[in-house]
Image 1 (cartoon, rainbow, N blue to C red):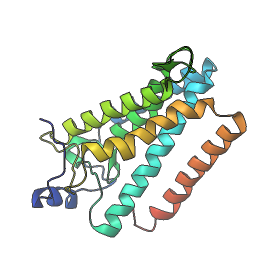
Image 2 (cartoon, rainbow, N blue to C red):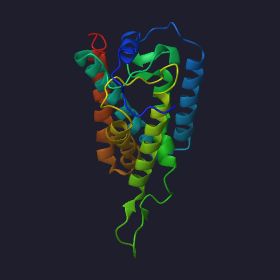
Image 3 (cartoon, one colour):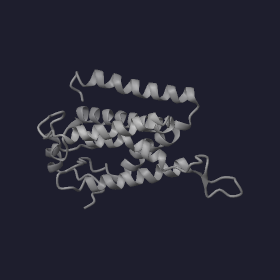
Image 4 (cartoon, rainbow, N blue to C red):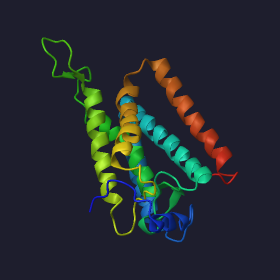
Length: 222
């Protein structure tokens, strides 16, 4: 069953109110296995010196964390976040909108998206006589964003409430436009940045993530 918009129901609100962030009540060993898979993928790319893939993965994953932090802050100050995950659907909830399995998937999503691009990343679709056309990196980002938005709509309809949308105006379309497109633009474009700009982007991105977590978690905001 696919759900395309939040319903604003009391049931959805109650489900969000019942969430226990960073509770170990549902913890199991799949947590360790998933972490091992992520380490294997990244170290395999590093061992092959495939730095572009590593940059793609880190770029998207950093954007993911900034979004999850923002979502948790929205939940703290406005009563409910834009999206939530239930304790029943995961082994561990990191922030109210993201569980361990989901976060680890996003740590690899940038690498996957990058590897799905044509070998020649300067390729342009629908170009005429070598002019115009659409950048293959943009097309790839839009395709991945649409796929992820549709899959999220499936998760929002699962019986264990893998995703919970409270607000009636939040759903597949805003997720596609405001969330997933920026995610995959980061993974598809950051590797091709001029080296100094790429380094600055990643340092600022991850420095901000670390700073916000250090401040907001102890303060009880997220």
